[in-house]
Image (cartoon, rainbow, N blue to C red):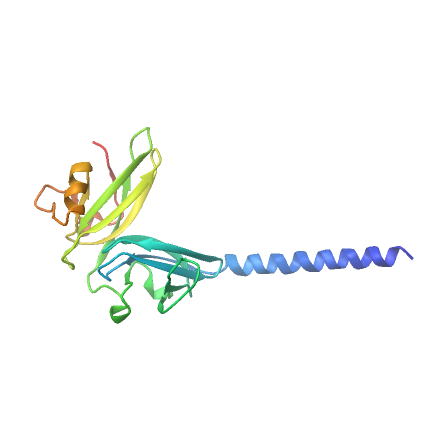
Length: 204
């Protein structure tokens, strides 16, 4: 008589395992899209991203651009606290691969300029927090990103041809934070079409 409950328990475990495996397989099969998200609102803002296998809140500074790799069908929302959603901004499609998506719902879509993807590598034995300042040809302000890079790790950036890239020191950061510009100084890199796919060592 004890055999029947045992068999039922085994069947239940097998059923749950199969359902879990099917769910994991379905999640793994979702295609992902690499693109650049740019905050063109003109001010600091909090957002929330939700999609297959992901849900998180994050903030972006004014004119900040960050590389993303989200599943197809993921949605970007405005958020007050990073946990709740407000207005829908965009939904990611397979056609967005390699493009720049904007956070302003009035101009949601793709940047009219062509971008290339480059990588910047921390070629030091020590981890470094780097501040990347960019001046794009399609906007009047600057982009700002602070990134922690471990030894010999790299960051990918999708940038329009003609963008000036600076790895700013503390003095340059202070200048930019005061509302002034540094693009009259020699940049670390001025992006060219031929730079697509290249890796640049940050430290000379």
